[in-house]
Image 1 (cartoon, one colour):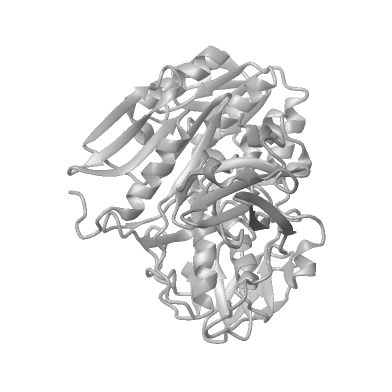
Image 2: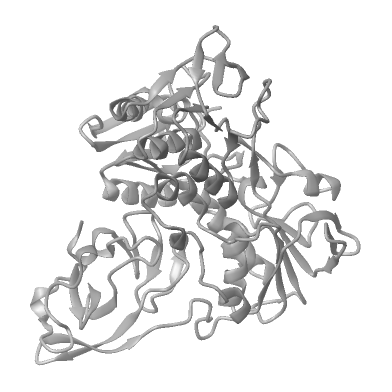
Length: 517
Protein backbone atom coordinates (compact mmCIF):
# COMPACT_ATOMS: atom_id res chain seq x y z
CA UNK A 1 0.00 0.00 0.00
CA UNK A 2 1.36 3.42 -0.93
CA UNK A 3 1.48 6.45 1.33
CA UNK A 4 -1.42 7.98 -0.58
CA UNK A 5 -3.61 4.98 0.10
CA UNK A 6 -2.63 4.84 3.77
CA UNK A 7 -3.87 8.38 4.39
CA UNK A 8 -2.43 11.87 4.50
CA UNK A 9 1.34 12.11 4.34
CA UNK A 10 4.05 14.65 3.73
CA UNK A 11 3.78 18.38 4.41
CA UNK A 12 0.52 20.28 4.68
CA UNK A 13 0.43 22.32 1.50
CA UNK A 14 -1.84 24.94 3.05
CA UNK A 15 0.52 25.87 5.87
CA UNK A 16 4.00 24.41 5.27
CA UNK A 17 4.22 24.03 1.52
CA UNK A 18 7.26 22.45 -0.10
CA UNK A 19 10.35 23.97 -1.64
CA UNK A 20 10.38 24.46 -5.39
CA UNK A 21 13.61 22.47 -5.62
CA UNK A 22 11.97 19.53 -3.81
CA UNK A 23 9.69 18.86 -6.78
CA UNK A 24 11.69 17.89 -9.84
CA UNK A 25 10.46 18.55 -13.35
CA UNK A 26 8.32 15.59 -14.43
CA UNK A 27 8.03 14.28 -10.89
CA UNK A 28 5.02 13.46 -8.70
CA UNK A 29 4.87 13.89 -4.96
CA UNK A 30 2.18 13.14 -2.40
CA UNK A 31 1.40 15.71 0.31
CA UNK A 32 -1.86 16.86 1.85
CA UNK A 33 -4.16 19.80 2.37
CA UNK A 34 -5.77 19.29 5.75
CA UNK A 35 -7.31 15.82 5.60
CA UNK A 36 -7.11 15.58 1.81
CA UNK A 37 -4.25 13.65 0.18
CA UNK A 38 -2.88 15.75 -2.68
CA UNK A 39 -0.76 14.79 -5.66
CA UNK A 40 1.65 17.46 -6.88
CA UNK A 41 2.91 17.19 -10.45
CA UNK A 42 5.44 19.50 -12.01
CA UNK A 43 5.76 20.06 -15.75
CA UNK A 44 8.40 22.71 -16.40
CA UNK A 45 7.27 25.87 -14.61
CA UNK A 46 3.73 24.60 -14.13
CA UNK A 47 2.68 22.71 -11.00
CA UNK A 48 -0.65 20.93 -10.70
CA UNK A 49 -2.31 19.87 -7.46
CA UNK A 50 -4.97 17.18 -7.72
CA UNK A 51 -6.56 14.48 -5.59
CA UNK A 52 -4.08 11.69 -4.91
CA UNK A 53 -6.58 8.83 -5.15
CA UNK A 54 -8.36 7.42 -8.18
CA UNK A 55 -12.14 7.76 -7.97
CA UNK A 56 -12.65 4.17 -9.15
CA UNK A 57 -11.05 1.91 -6.50
CA UNK A 58 -8.88 4.52 -4.71
CA UNK A 59 -5.67 3.57 -6.47
CA UNK A 60 -2.63 5.70 -5.62
CA UNK A 61 -2.07 7.96 -8.59
CA UNK A 62 1.49 8.67 -7.47
CA UNK A 63 2.24 5.04 -8.39
CA UNK A 64 0.80 5.56 -11.85
CA UNK A 65 2.06 6.93 -15.15
CA UNK A 66 2.29 10.51 -16.35
CA UNK A 67 1.38 10.97 -20.02
CA UNK A 68 1.49 14.58 -21.11
CA UNK A 69 -0.99 16.54 -19.00
CA UNK A 70 -2.63 13.37 -17.66
CA UNK A 71 -2.03 10.75 -14.98
CA UNK A 72 -3.07 7.10 -15.25
CA UNK A 73 -4.05 4.93 -12.30
CA UNK A 74 -1.92 1.81 -11.72
CA UNK A 75 -4.84 -0.38 -10.71
CA UNK A 76 -7.21 -0.33 -13.69
CA UNK A 77 -5.78 2.34 -16.01
CA UNK A 78 -8.26 5.13 -15.40
CA UNK A 79 -6.93 8.44 -16.71
CA UNK A 80 -7.35 11.98 -15.34
CA UNK A 81 -6.67 15.46 -16.69
CA UNK A 82 -4.20 17.21 -14.41
CA UNK A 83 -5.51 20.67 -15.21
CA UNK A 84 -9.21 20.03 -14.63
CA UNK A 85 -9.34 16.74 -12.71
CA UNK A 86 -11.71 15.32 -15.35
CA UNK A 87 -11.93 11.55 -15.64
CA UNK A 88 -10.88 11.07 -19.26
CA UNK A 89 -10.92 7.28 -19.55
CA UNK A 90 -13.03 4.71 -17.71
CA UNK A 91 -13.25 2.85 -15.40
CA UNK A 92 -13.19 6.03 -13.31
CA UNK A 93 -16.36 8.02 -13.94
CA UNK A 94 -15.95 10.86 -11.45
CA UNK A 95 -13.32 13.62 -11.52
CA UNK A 96 -10.63 14.10 -8.92
CA UNK A 97 -10.53 17.42 -7.04
CA UNK A 98 -8.04 20.14 -7.96
CA UNK A 99 -6.43 22.90 -5.92
CA UNK A 100 -5.17 26.33 -6.89
CA UNK A 101 -1.37 26.34 -6.74
CA UNK A 102 0.43 29.34 -5.24
CA UNK A 103 4.20 29.95 -5.33
CA UNK A 104 5.58 32.18 -2.56
CA UNK A 105 9.22 32.70 -1.59
CA UNK A 106 10.24 29.75 -3.73
CA UNK A 107 7.79 27.47 -1.95
CA UNK A 108 4.69 25.76 -3.32
CA UNK A 109 1.36 26.05 -1.50
CA UNK A 110 -2.22 25.22 -2.39
CA UNK A 111 -5.21 27.48 -2.07
CA UNK A 112 -8.85 26.82 -2.85
CA UNK A 113 -10.03 23.28 -3.42
CA UNK A 114 -12.23 22.83 -6.48
CA UNK A 115 -14.68 19.97 -6.85
CA UNK A 116 -16.99 19.48 -9.80
CA UNK A 117 -20.24 17.63 -10.23
CA UNK A 118 -19.35 14.38 -12.02
CA UNK A 119 -21.57 15.19 -15.01
CA UNK A 120 -21.02 18.92 -15.32
CA UNK A 121 -19.49 19.78 -18.71
CA UNK A 122 -16.17 21.55 -18.79
CA UNK A 123 -16.21 25.17 -19.99
CA UNK A 124 -16.34 25.36 -23.76
CA UNK A 125 -17.60 21.80 -24.20
CA UNK A 126 -20.85 21.59 -26.15
CA UNK A 127 -22.46 19.18 -28.64
CA UNK A 128 -21.61 19.76 -32.30
CA UNK A 129 -24.96 18.50 -33.63
CA UNK A 130 -27.20 17.28 -30.81
CA UNK A 131 -30.09 14.91 -31.59
CA UNK A 132 -33.57 15.70 -30.32
CA UNK A 133 -33.51 12.66 -28.00
CA UNK A 134 -31.30 9.69 -27.18
CA UNK A 135 -32.43 6.22 -26.15
CA UNK A 136 -29.94 3.68 -24.80
CA UNK A 137 -30.82 -0.01 -24.63
CA UNK A 138 -28.91 -1.52 -21.72
CA UNK A 139 -27.73 -0.11 -18.38
CA UNK A 140 -24.48 -2.06 -18.26
CA UNK A 141 -20.98 -0.70 -18.66
CA UNK A 142 -21.46 0.81 -22.12
CA UNK A 143 -24.97 2.15 -21.61
CA UNK A 144 -24.32 3.79 -18.24
CA UNK A 145 -21.04 5.35 -19.37
CA UNK A 146 -22.69 6.66 -22.54
CA UNK A 147 -25.56 8.30 -20.65
CA UNK A 148 -23.13 10.06 -18.33
CA UNK A 149 -20.90 11.19 -21.20
CA UNK A 150 -23.86 12.75 -23.00
CA UNK A 151 -24.37 15.04 -20.01
CA UNK A 152 -20.63 15.65 -19.59
CA UNK A 153 -20.54 16.82 -23.20
CA UNK A 154 -23.23 19.40 -22.49
CA UNK A 155 -26.17 17.53 -24.06
CA UNK A 156 -29.39 18.91 -22.58
CA UNK A 157 -31.99 16.77 -24.37
CA UNK A 158 -33.89 13.72 -23.13
CA UNK A 159 -31.75 10.67 -22.28
CA UNK A 160 -33.56 7.40 -21.56
CA UNK A 161 -31.96 4.09 -20.62
CA UNK A 162 -34.08 0.99 -21.18
CA UNK A 163 -33.18 -1.89 -18.86
CA UNK A 164 -35.37 -4.37 -16.95
CA UNK A 165 -32.96 -4.99 -14.05
CA UNK A 166 -34.15 -3.21 -10.89
CA UNK A 167 -30.64 -2.43 -9.61
CA UNK A 168 -28.77 -1.34 -12.72
CA UNK A 169 -26.37 0.34 -13.34
CA UNK A 170 -23.94 -1.39 -10.98
CA UNK A 171 -20.35 -2.58 -10.72
CA UNK A 172 -20.61 -5.89 -12.57
CA UNK A 173 -16.92 -7.00 -12.23
CA UNK A 174 -17.30 -7.07 -8.46
CA UNK A 175 -20.01 -9.71 -8.66
CA UNK A 176 -17.53 -12.55 -9.21
CA UNK A 177 -14.79 -11.03 -7.06
CA UNK A 178 -14.99 -9.25 -3.68
CA UNK A 179 -18.78 -9.17 -3.39
CA UNK A 180 -19.10 -12.91 -3.94
CA UNK A 181 -16.11 -13.58 -1.67
CA UNK A 182 -17.74 -11.59 1.12
CA UNK A 183 -14.99 -8.97 1.29
CA UNK A 184 -17.12 -6.21 -0.25
CA UNK A 185 -20.54 -5.14 0.97
CA UNK A 186 -23.57 -4.42 -1.17
CA UNK A 187 -22.80 -0.72 -0.68
CA UNK A 188 -19.89 -1.09 -3.10
CA UNK A 189 -22.03 -2.34 -5.95
CA UNK A 190 -24.09 0.65 -7.23
CA UNK A 191 -22.17 2.83 -9.67
CA UNK A 192 -23.96 5.93 -8.38
CA UNK A 193 -25.86 6.89 -5.21
CA UNK A 194 -29.64 6.89 -5.02
CA UNK A 195 -31.21 9.74 -6.95
CA UNK A 196 -28.12 10.43 -9.06
CA UNK A 197 -29.69 9.70 -12.44
CA UNK A 198 -32.87 11.61 -11.61
CA UNK A 199 -30.80 14.61 -10.55
CA UNK A 200 -29.04 14.59 -13.90
CA UNK A 201 -32.26 14.00 -15.85
CA UNK A 202 -31.34 10.53 -17.02
CA UNK A 203 -34.48 8.41 -17.10
CA UNK A 204 -34.19 4.65 -16.52
CA UNK A 205 -37.18 2.80 -17.95
CA UNK A 206 -37.45 -0.52 -16.11
CA UNK A 207 -38.63 -2.63 -19.02
CA UNK A 208 -37.13 -4.94 -21.62
CA UNK A 209 -36.79 -3.70 -25.17
CA UNK A 210 -38.64 -6.11 -27.48
CA UNK A 211 -38.21 -4.50 -30.88
CA UNK A 212 -36.81 -1.61 -32.90
CA UNK A 213 -38.40 0.13 -35.87
CA UNK A 214 -35.53 1.97 -37.59
CA UNK A 215 -37.85 3.65 -40.11
CA UNK A 216 -40.15 5.07 -37.41
CA UNK A 217 -37.24 5.51 -34.96
CA UNK A 218 -39.02 3.81 -32.09
CA UNK A 219 -38.20 1.15 -29.52
CA UNK A 220 -40.98 -1.22 -28.41
CA UNK A 221 -41.05 -2.26 -24.76
CA UNK A 222 -42.27 -5.37 -22.97
CA UNK A 223 -44.58 -3.24 -20.82
CA UNK A 224 -46.48 -2.19 -23.94
CA UNK A 225 -44.87 1.20 -24.27
CA UNK A 226 -43.05 2.73 -27.20
CA UNK A 227 -40.12 5.12 -27.01
CA UNK A 228 -39.27 7.47 -29.88
CA UNK A 229 -35.64 8.34 -30.49
CA UNK A 230 -33.57 10.57 -32.69
CA UNK A 231 -30.41 8.58 -31.90
CA UNK A 232 -30.26 5.06 -30.48
CA UNK A 233 -27.39 3.24 -28.74
CA UNK A 234 -27.63 -0.53 -28.52
CA UNK A 235 -25.71 -1.86 -25.51
CA UNK A 236 -27.66 -4.89 -24.22
CA UNK A 237 -24.51 -6.82 -23.31
CA UNK A 238 -24.25 -10.60 -23.28
CA UNK A 239 -25.92 -13.50 -21.55
CA UNK A 240 -24.29 -16.57 -19.99
CA UNK A 241 -24.36 -19.81 -21.96
CA UNK A 242 -26.48 -22.54 -20.38
CA UNK A 243 -25.16 -26.04 -19.80
CA UNK A 244 -27.11 -28.44 -22.01
CA UNK A 245 -27.22 -31.59 -19.88
CA UNK A 246 -29.96 -33.30 -17.87
CA UNK A 247 -30.49 -31.42 -14.60
CA UNK A 248 -29.09 -28.11 -15.87
CA UNK A 249 -32.29 -26.36 -14.72
CA UNK A 250 -32.31 -27.65 -11.14
CA UNK A 251 -32.73 -24.90 -8.51
CA UNK A 252 -29.21 -25.36 -7.11
CA UNK A 253 -27.63 -24.74 -10.54
CA UNK A 254 -26.66 -21.10 -11.11
CA UNK A 255 -25.14 -18.88 -13.76
CA UNK A 256 -23.57 -15.51 -12.98
CA UNK A 257 -24.25 -12.33 -14.90
CA UNK A 258 -26.46 -10.07 -12.81
CA UNK A 259 -26.53 -8.77 -9.25
CA UNK A 260 -29.52 -11.02 -8.64
CA UNK A 261 -27.46 -14.01 -9.85
CA UNK A 262 -24.56 -13.17 -7.54
CA UNK A 263 -26.87 -12.62 -4.57
CA UNK A 264 -28.59 -15.96 -5.24
CA UNK A 265 -25.21 -17.73 -5.23
CA UNK A 266 -24.32 -15.95 -1.99
CA UNK A 267 -27.51 -17.16 -0.34
CA UNK A 268 -26.95 -20.70 -1.62
CA UNK A 269 -23.36 -20.64 -0.37
CA UNK A 270 -24.56 -19.97 3.17
CA UNK A 271 -26.01 -23.50 3.33
CA UNK A 272 -23.84 -25.33 0.81
CA UNK A 273 -21.36 -28.03 1.81
CA UNK A 274 -19.85 -28.80 -1.61
CA UNK A 275 -19.51 -26.80 -4.82
CA UNK A 276 -18.88 -27.72 -8.43
CA UNK A 277 -17.95 -24.96 -10.86
CA UNK A 278 -18.44 -25.99 -14.47
CA UNK A 279 -16.04 -24.17 -16.77
CA UNK A 280 -12.62 -22.57 -16.32
CA UNK A 281 -13.49 -19.22 -17.87
CA UNK A 282 -12.56 -16.02 -16.03
CA UNK A 283 -15.99 -16.03 -14.39
CA UNK A 284 -15.69 -19.71 -13.50
CA UNK A 285 -12.27 -19.37 -11.88
CA UNK A 286 -13.12 -16.12 -10.10
CA UNK A 287 -16.23 -17.79 -8.67
CA UNK A 288 -14.09 -20.73 -7.57
CA UNK A 289 -11.70 -18.34 -5.82
CA UNK A 290 -14.52 -16.41 -4.16
CA UNK A 291 -16.22 -19.53 -2.81
CA UNK A 292 -12.93 -21.01 -1.61
CA UNK A 293 -12.34 -17.72 0.22
CA UNK A 294 -15.63 -18.46 1.98
CA UNK A 295 -14.22 -21.85 3.03
CA UNK A 296 -16.29 -24.06 0.75
CA UNK A 297 -14.77 -27.12 -0.94
CA UNK A 298 -14.71 -26.42 -4.68
CA UNK A 299 -14.25 -28.69 -7.70
CA UNK A 300 -13.76 -27.17 -11.17
CA UNK A 301 -14.84 -29.29 -14.12
CA UNK A 302 -13.59 -28.08 -17.47
CA UNK A 303 -13.06 -29.27 -21.02
CA UNK A 304 -9.77 -27.37 -21.06
CA UNK A 305 -6.52 -29.24 -20.63
CA UNK A 306 -4.96 -26.02 -19.27
CA UNK A 307 -7.34 -23.50 -17.63
CA UNK A 308 -7.00 -20.11 -19.39
CA UNK A 309 -4.15 -21.51 -21.46
CA UNK A 310 -5.64 -20.26 -24.72
CA UNK A 311 -5.75 -16.71 -23.30
CA UNK A 312 -2.57 -16.51 -21.22
CA UNK A 313 -0.29 -19.18 -22.69
CA UNK A 314 1.33 -21.96 -20.62
CA UNK A 315 3.54 -19.90 -18.30
CA UNK A 316 0.96 -17.53 -16.85
CA UNK A 317 -1.81 -20.13 -16.99
CA UNK A 318 0.37 -22.39 -14.85
CA UNK A 319 0.71 -19.62 -12.25
CA UNK A 320 -3.07 -19.19 -12.11
CA UNK A 321 -3.58 -22.94 -11.81
CA UNK A 322 -0.95 -23.21 -9.07
CA UNK A 323 -2.62 -20.43 -7.07
CA UNK A 324 -5.94 -22.27 -7.18
CA UNK A 325 -4.20 -25.53 -6.28
CA UNK A 326 -2.66 -23.90 -3.20
CA UNK A 327 -6.09 -22.66 -2.20
CA UNK A 328 -7.44 -26.20 -2.34
CA UNK A 329 -9.46 -26.15 -5.57
CA UNK A 330 -9.73 -29.59 -7.20
CA UNK A 331 -9.52 -29.56 -10.99
CA UNK A 332 -11.04 -32.11 -13.36
CA UNK A 333 -9.43 -31.31 -16.69
CA UNK A 334 -10.46 -32.39 -20.19
CA UNK A 335 -13.72 -33.48 -18.57
CA UNK A 336 -17.39 -33.22 -19.46
CA UNK A 337 -20.49 -33.07 -17.27
CA UNK A 338 -22.97 -35.83 -18.14
CA UNK A 339 -25.79 -34.90 -15.78
CA UNK A 340 -26.62 -32.95 -12.62
CA UNK A 341 -28.58 -34.67 -9.90
CA UNK A 342 -30.00 -33.30 -6.67
CA UNK A 343 -26.74 -33.49 -4.75
CA UNK A 344 -24.18 -34.74 -7.27
CA UNK A 345 -22.60 -33.91 -10.60
CA UNK A 346 -21.85 -36.94 -12.74
CA UNK A 347 -19.02 -36.67 -15.25
CA UNK A 348 -18.84 -38.35 -18.64
CA UNK A 349 -16.15 -40.74 -17.36
CA UNK A 350 -18.56 -41.99 -14.68
CA UNK A 351 -17.02 -40.09 -11.77
CA UNK A 352 -19.51 -38.57 -9.32
CA UNK A 353 -18.83 -35.31 -7.44
CA UNK A 354 -20.78 -34.13 -4.41
CA UNK A 355 -22.44 -30.80 -5.13
CA UNK A 356 -25.33 -29.01 -3.45
CA UNK A 357 -24.27 -25.82 -5.28
CA UNK A 358 -23.35 -25.76 -8.97
CA UNK A 359 -22.18 -22.64 -10.81
CA UNK A 360 -21.86 -22.76 -14.59
CA UNK A 361 -19.26 -20.47 -16.16
CA UNK A 362 -18.76 -21.68 -19.73
CA UNK A 363 -18.85 -18.32 -21.49
CA UNK A 364 -21.36 -15.78 -22.71
CA UNK A 365 -22.99 -14.93 -26.03
CA UNK A 366 -23.87 -11.41 -27.21
CA UNK A 367 -27.52 -10.40 -27.16
CA UNK A 368 -28.07 -9.86 -30.87
CA UNK A 369 -31.81 -10.55 -31.26
CA UNK A 370 -32.89 -6.89 -31.29
CA UNK A 371 -30.24 -5.92 -33.84
CA UNK A 372 -30.97 -8.90 -36.07
CA UNK A 373 -34.72 -8.23 -36.08
CA UNK A 374 -34.09 -4.57 -36.89
CA UNK A 375 -32.09 -5.54 -39.96
CA UNK A 376 -28.69 -4.33 -38.75
CA UNK A 377 -25.64 -5.90 -40.31
CA UNK A 378 -24.47 -8.87 -38.22
CA UNK A 379 -21.19 -10.79 -38.39
CA UNK A 380 -20.49 -12.57 -35.10
CA UNK A 381 -21.69 -9.36 -33.47
CA UNK A 382 -23.21 -6.09 -34.57
CA UNK A 383 -20.93 -4.64 -37.24
CA UNK A 384 -19.97 -1.02 -36.55
CA UNK A 385 -17.61 1.43 -38.21
CA UNK A 386 -14.73 3.19 -36.48
CA UNK A 387 -17.18 5.66 -34.89
CA UNK A 388 -19.30 2.73 -33.56
CA UNK A 389 -22.17 3.53 -35.94
CA UNK A 390 -24.10 0.52 -37.25
CA UNK A 391 -25.36 -0.07 -40.79
CA UNK A 392 -28.37 2.11 -39.85
CA UNK A 393 -27.09 5.71 -39.53
CA UNK A 394 -29.23 6.64 -36.50
CA UNK A 395 -28.16 3.58 -34.48
CA UNK A 396 -24.84 3.01 -32.69
CA UNK A 397 -23.70 -0.10 -30.83
CA UNK A 398 -21.20 -0.56 -27.99
CA UNK A 399 -20.06 -3.14 -25.51
CA UNK A 400 -20.22 -6.93 -25.82
CA UNK A 401 -22.37 -6.92 -28.96
CA UNK A 402 -20.21 -4.60 -31.10
CA UNK A 403 -17.62 -5.81 -33.63
CA UNK A 404 -15.43 -2.87 -34.55
CA UNK A 405 -12.41 -2.31 -36.81
CA UNK A 406 -9.34 -2.59 -34.60
CA UNK A 407 -6.69 -0.17 -35.90
CA UNK A 408 -3.79 -2.21 -34.50
CA UNK A 409 -4.56 -5.67 -35.84
CA UNK A 410 -6.29 -4.53 -39.03
CA UNK A 411 -9.19 -6.84 -38.21
CA UNK A 412 -12.68 -6.46 -36.84
CA UNK A 413 -12.83 -7.67 -33.25
CA UNK A 414 -15.38 -8.09 -30.50
CA UNK A 415 -14.21 -7.92 -26.87
CA UNK A 416 -16.21 -8.84 -23.76
CA UNK A 417 -14.57 -6.69 -21.08
CA UNK A 418 -16.00 -4.08 -18.71
CA UNK A 419 -13.49 -1.27 -19.31
CA UNK A 420 -13.67 -1.74 -23.08
CA UNK A 421 -17.46 -1.47 -22.94
CA UNK A 422 -17.32 1.68 -20.80
CA UNK A 423 -14.87 3.37 -23.13
CA UNK A 424 -16.92 2.34 -26.16
CA UNK A 425 -20.01 3.87 -24.56
CA UNK A 426 -18.15 7.11 -23.95
CA UNK A 427 -16.92 7.29 -27.55
CA UNK A 428 -20.36 6.43 -28.93
CA UNK A 429 -21.91 9.22 -26.85
CA UNK A 430 -19.51 11.80 -28.21
CA UNK A 431 -20.16 10.63 -31.76
CA UNK A 432 -23.93 10.71 -31.25
CA UNK A 433 -23.42 14.40 -30.48
CA UNK A 434 -21.65 15.04 -33.76
CA UNK A 435 -18.02 14.16 -33.11
CA UNK A 436 -16.23 12.05 -35.71
CA UNK A 437 -14.06 10.23 -33.19
CA UNK A 438 -12.70 6.76 -34.02
CA UNK A 439 -12.72 4.21 -31.22
CA UNK A 440 -9.03 3.49 -30.72
CA UNK A 441 -8.75 2.53 -27.05
CA UNK A 442 -6.36 -0.31 -26.27
CA UNK A 443 -8.43 -3.14 -24.71
CA UNK A 444 -7.80 -3.68 -21.01
CA UNK A 445 -9.12 -6.05 -18.36
CA UNK A 446 -8.16 -7.32 -14.94
CA UNK A 447 -8.85 -10.62 -13.21
CA UNK A 448 -8.56 -11.48 -9.51
CA UNK A 449 -7.77 -14.91 -8.05
CA UNK A 450 -7.31 -14.61 -4.28
CA UNK A 451 -4.29 -12.29 -3.90
CA UNK A 452 -3.23 -12.82 -7.52
CA UNK A 453 -4.16 -9.80 -9.63
CA UNK A 454 -3.69 -10.02 -13.39
CA UNK A 455 -3.73 -7.03 -15.74
CA UNK A 456 -4.01 -7.53 -19.50
CA UNK A 457 -3.66 -4.84 -22.18
CA UNK A 458 -4.11 -5.31 -25.90
CA UNK A 459 -5.81 -8.10 -27.82
CA UNK A 460 -4.15 -11.31 -28.98
CA UNK A 461 -6.39 -14.08 -30.24
CA UNK A 462 -3.34 -15.83 -31.73
CA UNK A 463 0.38 -15.29 -31.29
CA UNK A 464 3.68 -16.75 -32.47
CA UNK A 465 5.54 -16.34 -29.20
CA UNK A 466 4.84 -15.50 -25.58
CA UNK A 467 7.90 -13.80 -24.08
CA UNK A 468 8.12 -14.01 -20.28
CA UNK A 469 9.91 -11.28 -18.33
CA UNK A 470 10.51 -11.42 -14.59
CA UNK A 471 9.44 -14.16 -12.19
CA UNK A 472 5.78 -15.05 -12.74
CA UNK A 473 5.86 -17.83 -10.17
CA UNK A 474 7.41 -15.42 -7.69
CA UNK A 475 4.56 -12.97 -8.15
CA UNK A 476 6.08 -10.26 -10.35
CA UNK A 477 6.44 -10.56 -14.09
CA UNK A 478 4.82 -10.15 -17.47
CA UNK A 479 4.14 -11.96 -20.72
CA UNK A 480 4.30 -10.23 -24.11
CA UNK A 481 2.25 -11.91 -26.81
CA UNK A 482 3.79 -11.32 -30.23
CA UNK A 483 2.95 -12.17 -33.83
CA UNK A 484 4.97 -11.28 -36.89
CA UNK A 485 7.48 -9.46 -34.72
CA UNK A 486 4.84 -7.14 -33.21
CA UNK A 487 3.57 -7.09 -29.64
CA UNK A 488 -0.20 -7.55 -29.62
CA UNK A 489 -0.83 -7.75 -25.87
CA UNK A 490 0.87 -7.85 -22.49
CA UNK A 491 -0.32 -9.61 -19.34
CA UNK A 492 1.32 -8.83 -16.01
CA UNK A 493 1.15 -9.69 -12.33
CA UNK A 494 2.65 -7.62 -9.54
CA UNK A 495 3.97 -5.08 -12.03
CA UNK A 496 1.55 -2.21 -12.54
CA UNK A 497 4.03 0.06 -14.28
CA UNK A 498 4.83 -2.53 -16.94
CA UNK A 499 1.12 -2.78 -17.68
CA UNK A 500 0.73 1.00 -17.94
CA UNK A 501 3.79 1.35 -20.14
CA UNK A 502 2.62 -1.50 -22.36
CA UNK A 503 -0.73 0.22 -22.83
CA UNK A 504 1.02 3.42 -23.84
CA UNK A 505 3.35 1.59 -26.23
CA UNK A 506 0.37 -0.10 -27.90
CA UNK A 507 -1.33 3.27 -28.29
CA UNK A 508 1.73 4.59 -30.11
CA UNK A 509 2.46 1.44 -32.14
CA UNK A 510 2.41 1.68 -35.96
CA UNK A 511 -0.93 0.76 -37.49
CA UNK A 512 0.01 0.40 -41.13
CA UNK A 513 0.42 -3.37 -41.16
CA UNK A 514 -1.45 -6.23 -39.57
CA UNK A 515 0.31 -9.31 -38.20
CA UNK A 516 0.02 -12.49 -40.27
CA UNK A 517 -3.28 -14.33 -39.99
